[in-house]
Amino acid sequence: MASGDALSELARRLMEWYSANRREFPWRVGMSSEWQAALTAILLRKTRAETVAKHYREILSALETPERALSLGVEGIERLLRPLGLHRTRARQIHALARAWGSGSPELPGLGPYARALIECLARRRLVPVLDVNTVRVVKRVLGAENAEEAVRRVVERAGTCEANLALMDFAALVCRARRPRCGACPLRDLCVQAASSEPPSRAQSV
Image (cartoon, rainbow, N blue to C red; front, side):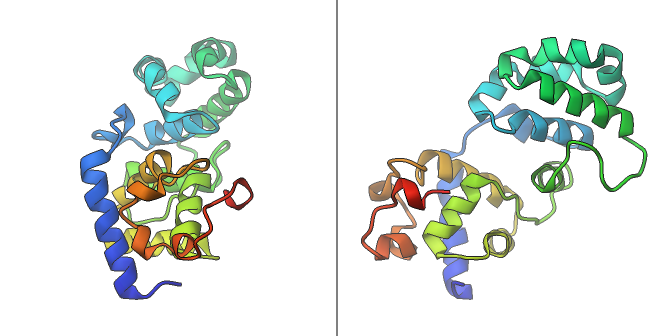
């Protein structure tokens, strides 16, 4: 694991890059509803953020509360989500989640570790790591980290804001891409274990 000084420098540069290059999505502005954060996590699963953004306001308006989701029923939710794909699976998950919402159960249907962490980050603004294939790719390449969750947690803590998770997501999408990463434009290059190895990331090394 990188030293504390290296982590602090990584977090500083990452947030500086993010302030100038962040992607603007509607769910990142003023999110306070845990239901809406949970819904957003389900919509983003296996779907490009840009695609979700095109339909987000219409979907959110129709599914603004668990009660509205229940009133639509599974078939109504399916029709609403059709432009995103995976609409049958997602409709069942959202309907089941709406039925269980407010039950007090710690294991709500359709919410795995990623969704729960995203709720903590977006709705509660807590310093928790949000792990997906993209944030894991960045910390493994830059830090050579084996324990991705611990590495992301430490980056978020050093940054002092849960938005470090969003910065990692944007950095993965725009710079540290799975294919053809933009290493020449990377502000973390001199800190990067992968770059120091002089071996460009291959498809086999991407996660």
